[in-house]
Image 1: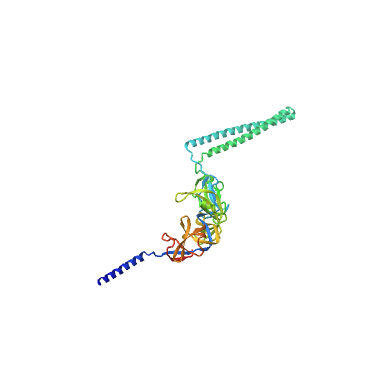
Image 2: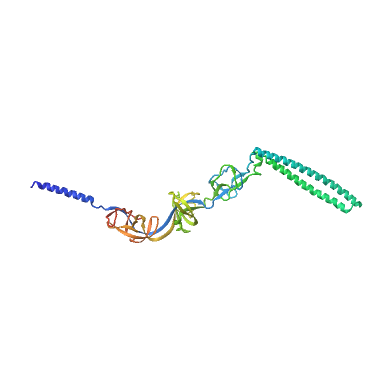
Length: 408
């Protein structure tokens, strides 16, 4: 019997050690958590949106007439002066090639005009001869009237014949000029492309210069190469890049919260710091836009003026991307919680407060909700420690140990 006691004692020791090890292994360990305090200070609610810069007044320079556009030498970024800088030059269009039928018709028109001119010259000569004869008859009538051989009526009739033939001669001369012009017109229809180009396209009688409408820079070339162009065709865009605005398309549900005059923070624009702006207009007309996920959304353009000094954003240009945050509400001395500490408990907002080494559930009432913080109306006191990013391992009464305390 005495020999069994050492075995029993050793066995009990082993059992106690195993039990203690299992108890230690399965004993609930404190969960490390990140803590922050309920703060009080300024809170602002913003609506974020991606926008683009654009020149306020963009002028599209178009061709004033149809013609042959010479190559545009201007480049994007070139300075222009109103009514001084020539942006483009338009020449007359060269005549088209004539097919065999059109050429035969044009040649026939020339022959017809020549024959008509010959008729006009003969008619002119006939009227001129009749006028010479009438003038001689009038002279004889005056001589006979002085001697009393003919009556005054016969003399007046001779005068009338002279005046009538003079008018007929003027008509014949005008008709003759008209027939000469018709012959020139018929000859013009036979001009081939490239014929007499030097005389037709010199600077004295041909080209139409297109000048800059305003002072600024060339923003974009829509047509650079030479070629035939129609009246009204766009050539390039001109504007003043020192006069910029930002346009942001927001969801219509967000746009109704924005008021004219609201402050704007412009971020990620490529330069240092944050630029300031102000909402000038919320356009009253919405439009449909398909998102990257293929969802149709109603969007509204919000126009923003830059308030920062132009020297700060002088490298921005037309059509540059920027990120904006429009401030729709701002107030001082507001108790606030980080959104990272909030979660839904059934249909209410809740947080876990850190009381000594325990997590205590608190239901809270929220007011305005910003991008990363929310207004606290009730539920926990200012200065209380709360748990950030609570996971499913934390419940009411769970033992916790602080990992770090932040001042979010």
